[in-house]
Length: 181
Image 1 (cartoon, helix red, strand yellow):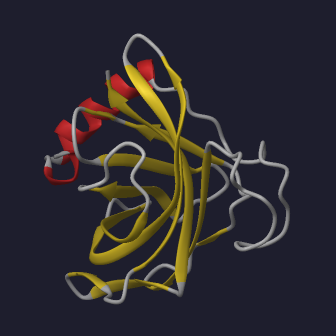
Image 2: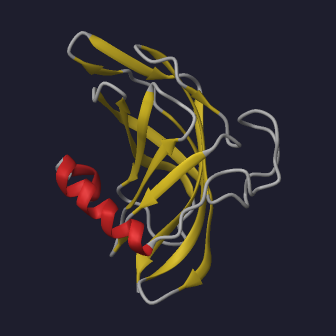
Image 3: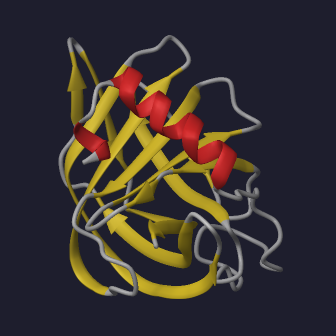
């Protein structure tokens, strides 16, 4: 599974995905306002997240993001969000290790990995998500693409040495994910 690969292997997987996975930034969804406002079911790369502790990062669904995702061959999905207007958090990795194409519902085990500008990495392991939409978009030569919308929470802080971060409330995400044909 992608979430448990080394950072170098994940980077290589992402590099492959960049050449095959179309990723846009937020703003094409017609919504406006804060994390819960607007209709964000049409975006392809949206993340609403607030952190506290050693990072006070905040993003709304309509903030500009770049996305990279891998193409899975079975259970599991992975997307990396890169905030484009931020100098504190460089990457937010979202891993849904048990998610299957078209699967929706509560209690999806989720891992959030936050990488700060100083390369400090925090992994929030006890997260869960509710997938409210996971619908087929298109098929290409590499994968079947699905529009995935969800909301999650991470009840425990992530610690790295003497530093820690926590997710404040719920995080929300929108991504186009692929499963191999």
